[in-house]
Image (cartoon, rainbow, N blue to C red; front, side):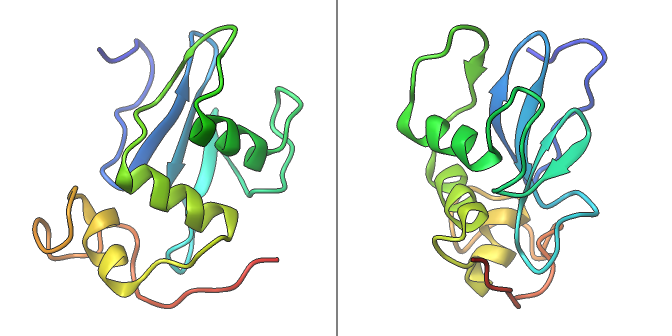
Length: 131
């Protein structure tokens, strides 16, 4: 069920957290994303892993909590699946996206080898390292 006054989630976006106050998504459909690296978007603003979120924790901490399935006092975690986990790993700098992932996984399909033929926002296969 979609919340009122919130835009639809683009295809190359993965829901991380939602509540009545905020929604957090990993996405490459934002101007701050480049070279296949997702950003965490909360309230329309993009954050990198080491950026402080409005709630007072680092973006990488929120992603780690989502990956670990920690209990929440309010709100709900988004679904945890293979695509989201890989996007999280790329966001955290644990790995870089492969060209196949750039084209297939983040191009709007669930599995490698099918779906849209364009990159759908994760354009190009080049990556940049993170520290």
